Length: 388
Picture 1 (spheres, rainbow, N blue to C red):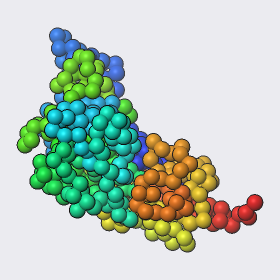
Picture 2: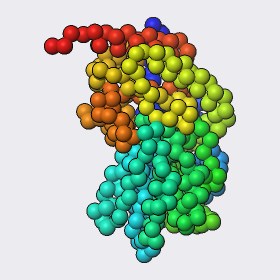
Picture 3: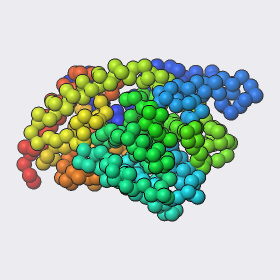
């Protein structure tokens, strides 16, 4: 058994803060504690300079312009700001929004809330591997369509959507494209221009930064996108998102972006090798199935179903030795089968038997070996238990 137990394999829920990120944040709690909006003295100037450096680092990670990055409290707020802001701003053009049935709840629940305010929402189906049908997307666009919202990579399965093709369709149809890239940014290359994104959300705590800080990219040219603010007050962030800036968090976000940009090529190979070893080891257990696409997926995420088992029972058997989840952290308390897996056409019994393994920067090979043996033993033990 590894010295560090339980072994953490829930990196898609959150990541540990990198020590280099923490070190860069610390002075902004004490020495450089100024308000970034206080532009009449050196404490405010220092804070503002740190925020702008972080903005440049976040922009560089996704190939955006610094002025196109709006800091928020996280990806959920960024998704809300994008969807609600576009719906309010472009109401004169139309009320139709297209999204996918497998989006994060931050998108799905916001779309459902907008429906009550007069929005027409189309929820696209996905195939058995979780991929959005491009022909169905094209056919769904109407003259009243103002936005297409499809995530870059799924938080439960790691499936990567054909975002470049989606962006091209949107550009051809002159419809805005919003992409929730929370699970992808910092893990794999995300280029807002190459993919034709007009808005994009991402978050620090998914990429070894602090919780409580994220960003929304808003395209400034070709086309210039404008949105209606959802928080008003002090006029911060170009009057798009008012509120005193979380300077230490933003500094940490910027540092995490810088580190991910530098380490990404090596980490992709390292994580894919570890993930493949874990996948092959667990798929050798009889009655185990992969959920998602074998190739179009994040290098660090693995979603598997174990027949004749319930994921809650398996999680209970493993929770002292391996930290896992049965899906999104936001819905981990639900007893219902995953709506993502259900939308993929996976039968309820298998959907209820699914576990998500997600590894990261600090995962070691001995932890992979331990997880394979531990899960294999626990699955066998639970299957052999007499039915009461």
